[in-house]
Length: 290
Image (tube, rainbow, N blue to C red; front, side):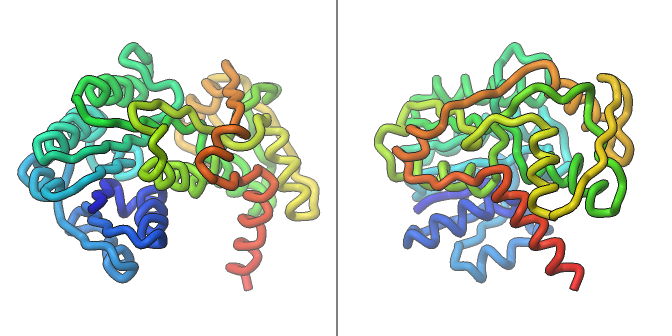
């Protein structure tokens, strides 16, 4: 039995479906108020609980061989980083160990560190350290920047409505943007790959590109030019929250270039390129407009 925590989220839901597609028995932890019906319909056994409720975690982990968690407050927006990503993940690790689970797969993030200045990255780093010291066989996935999060916010929302795309500075920093479906594929593969035990895997997309490269991919996918404007680091980006503008500025202070060819081959993951992602999104947008 495999327990997936964060199962109603985008990445967690993909993991559930990927495991079910391989014939695995899957238990999905969900809040009663969440949209958990699709998980049941897909064949998962849904159990109700919360990372802030230790008793529910003990019950969810009972009889489980592997625990996979993608849960984060950044997805739910209903609690705090401290309660969910820090304390909640620690409770889940403890519950998995006490229940006799053999493998714990933690979807963290690139840049996670107990000393990280950003609270989320710091909480993820502390959780990683606790997992490494837990005695459980662990796999830590550190994905790069998600295409599914950043491209809709910065590129699609303005471009699809005919407005200019606003980028920070010259947008010269390169990042190995990764699709959520690829993160899920690595998590599923880690269940079955012996080399994933006691391993930290930094994962990104098949190429490192700038946001200007991303705009060009959307231009090719849509067949039309997209106007680009720039703001200085620290200035707001129209139409997005201030926190997002700040993170976009931070992305222009470093590069994430992650060689992925050998790792993707070893784990059997066919990766999504930026152009493939843009084509799929443009096609879906056109279909939805019909």
